[in-house]
Length: 300
Image 1 (cartoon, rainbow, N blue to C red):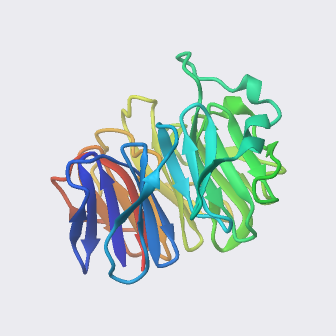
Image 2 (cartoon, rainbow, N blue to C red):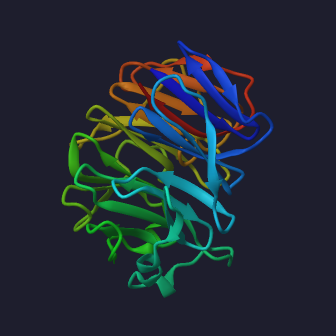
Image 3 (cartoon, one colour):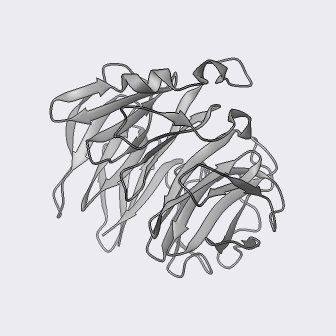
């Protein structure tokens, strides 16, 4: 299992094979893509690694800066940007997904501090449906490759990350300021819960072979931040304790919680990466002393 960690000062590969790349450059986002993957550097430069043990290479630059998140999709890599933008990257370069600029209700998207909203996270399920989380703008869904979009969740839910369950394509999950949200029908209906959590402010969500994990704290400042787990099918959350600090020093942020099979990785602002091989029951320190972690992904 490879653990790729994007940090404020480069990319680290941890596990059986350790390597570094892009030293001194902030890795804004990461995305697995089959046996390869993508990295976004400094919000502008896309880098690609194909399968096997090949190295990273720069693939090109976004026409506009402010890239925030990545997701591999059947028709090409999707790139979210500041200003609630969405682009598709392919061999031909970057093309803006114009239909996303016409999502119904877009005029109501906002941020509490008055800046334009950003595209914060993207998830693609096994059917090819695309879910895009705008902060603050809810979650928009496309089932036709991005040709059309519809809103699925009230923007005031204040979603920080959207994810899908690899084992159940129409199961969509969100970490939000109002708690944990789940949909069993592709976003048609939603259920929000905080059962078992010490606080309702959630930043990250991932699925480890039928187990949902989320990060929770008392608010944006990250006070009393902790990790929780529960069965994806339902039930109260229980706190992840073994091998983790009593409280994290800051929020476990969007994209800093990742899962693949039963393996879970957590990266922190303090530069520590924790790893679990039993879907979050117990963790151990995989690395420490890293620059602040910006993103974590797992893959073969």
